[in-house]
Image 1 (cartoon, one colour):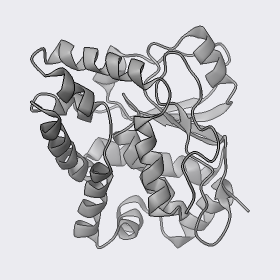
Image 2 (image 1 turned 90 degrees about the vertical axis):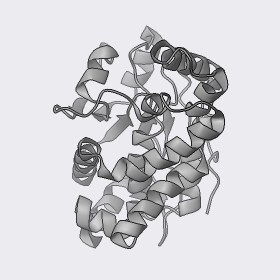
Image 3 (image 1 turned 30 degrees about the horizontal axis):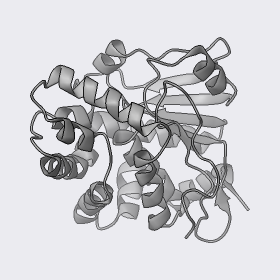
Image 4 (image 1 turned 180 degrees about the vertical axis):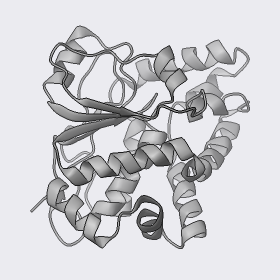
Length: 263
């Protein structure tokens, strides 16, 4: 097991939140997930020109946008002049709200927010659009075509699920995968991210308390554990879910490790 902050993971951008490298972790059997190859973030609708230039320098081959069509229309991604990545997104109906925004309608306190988000994470594996996108995410990683970015609205819930599953497939220790998940709470300019998140939530739900809205902008260990528990209950293990629902058997895992792990 390693620590989440062995190197500076966060790309210092001014208006794209939670943009970070989720490589660098050791894997079972030896080696580490390659750095500067796997990126995750929130949306890019407010990116500055300098942000876009920094993203272009990553030379991304793929961008996986886990948001639905209405979300993308509401907050369209901005692109830099050298952007050349293939953008992969779900084109069918997928719901209209990010999980934390949907939860705000029932969250009257931070405790409510945590309970609702645990329930939400347990149900994430049932979201057909998300599962479809995670399959496409894995398919592209199996081709080993270069650096990629996976993102949603805040880069923490749907993105967190996709990243945790890839970490599992690569053999990253569960504690390291959890540490990466929890970096949402400390990555980048959290004060600005929370303030913008609260503003977004309260535009839709004016009566939600500031404390409840702030709680929805973070993550808790219990959230990812709820997702892992749901997969274990339904499939016997997270590994079995990877095999039976996502088609990531041992042969596929070896291919992923070939592309994404360095010895």
